[in-house]
Length: 254
Image 1: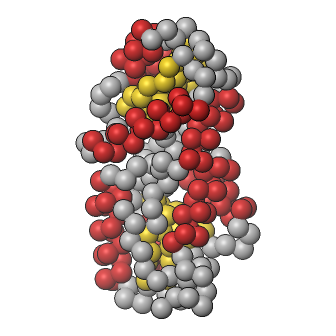
Image 2: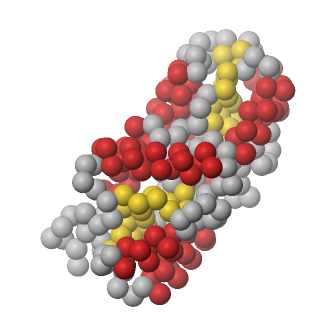
């Protein structure tokens, strides 16, 4: 959930991810930050995490304040607007602003479900050798949430992907709730899919995506497993877009 303040364009950009015990996740976030810097040379891009990984967001905001910055834009590296974006992140930002009264923080919208991310999913499938054809069934696999609305976003993304490509069928599945990957693969086969591909609606590799891959292999040993969205240029472009639509051009801030 966005929390917009009057923050000028040129303020530091803090990309914040949930965090993971798997070090591959934090490495992907750092690579994505490098991709954003490459798109916007000279920009000040910091990485931070809500939980489980270092550095935590409050520490990064405190560091900015100590360096003399008075404002920052936080871009959540989240693919859906659920608990982390609506509760965890706003609470961390509010507490940081309370402790750092000289720092004004504006929070952008989450990344998903931006149309460019669909292009990134399609690119990951193509890279894995899963070009669209009428015999291929695709599972769009997300993390899963207790928030039904967040899960509906994944279902809508799968439907949009199907409208744009010639697959036998596309359905969705989740790592932490139903429908699971095995059920999704069975549904695709029932709809005529001869081959299976799994497209992660995940930003980074990690333990949950490993679980998805294991279950997919168990249900379909020859399934094509695409890479997560990762630090693709398309993802970095969405991050930069969130920043530019949240920050106010210099001279227009109140």
